[in-house]
Image 1: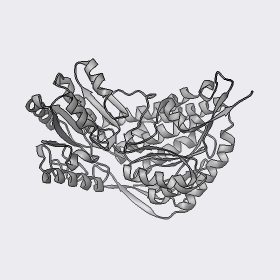
Image 2: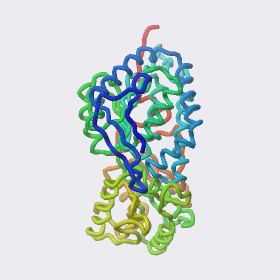
Image 3: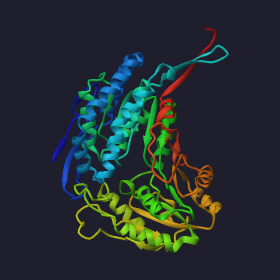
Image 4: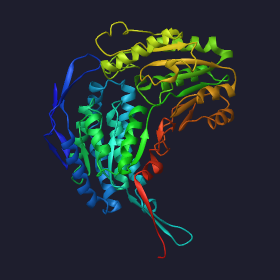
Length: 473
């Protein structure tokens, strides 16, 4: 068993003032694999003070210094790919294909951010004689979730550092091995002490202190809509700048001209990615009534051939859920779907046969679903899909937009002109047509209750900058 009993503050690993301990299990086996000592308010204040002291130095450092730090972190992290892959597989249990994709993307994020660090990004002239300077906002509090903690740490911190901010990170307490591994990388990269501080702690303790403390100028939060609303309310007391990436209930629209040999793998990839533990998962599959029988039959065959298993098996397409609590939550949603009259196409309650020890869920597809059912309205965060029929394109758009969320959407169809026309009418921050495309500089964020602000590329960088106009020079 791994013991994590230090936190990373001011460039050093220190014993936390907090004494609360938490034991974590391997999600595939139920075996206890780690014990972490959690930080408290005192530790959080220490980290904030260290970040503020570092900000006085870093905010005036050259752009070349920022680029150098980003490159160093990338290089150290890239050299530890296999080590990090093993930690994610053991602690989180995501399928190998997904872990490789996410880890590669996380490592790349430091170079993507580095490319943003150029003079014209931070200073430009206006025609009427004003000069605009974009200055770092201050210390950034980065609060991230458990669904692949390491990836969130990288994409958030890389952008903040590129902007010239220093960072206090509160990644999920359910991911101490990933969090500690990243802290070790920051230490080995020998960046400015206090530039990045990493705390193991709960949202109720560490997260709340970050939200309240006047020494934090900016918060980037990824998590549930309910927590995001509370965070935004608390942050207003000190007028913190806030970016919120919250929940989703993304639609996947299968058009009536879709080639099912391409469309079915696509909608299942995006619907069941990360074992369904993804805010962008396309968990509402909208299909034309005219092809209902054909598409549902294809979905049933495809889902029932997907292998559920531990990350140790390369063939596993769906892994365990992060915890027993999350497993039980998903079971309650499946029961709710049954109770409200949805029809099980495949899957259902309980564990897949032979996988009773871990947090494995039977990949489940409901048909005869409508948008008023709980399983179609609420974010489940597990491998549960709802199939909804529509009459025509206008009806599909109406159903897709009939949600409090608007994070992502997907379209499968052969007529790209038609698909684009539909995409332009969807209330979502991103729309992917016929494939999951990873463009690191495209804005990421949601409409409606999926959040406020954007991450990635210049849009994400600007969230960490304050514009200042100077006239008469």
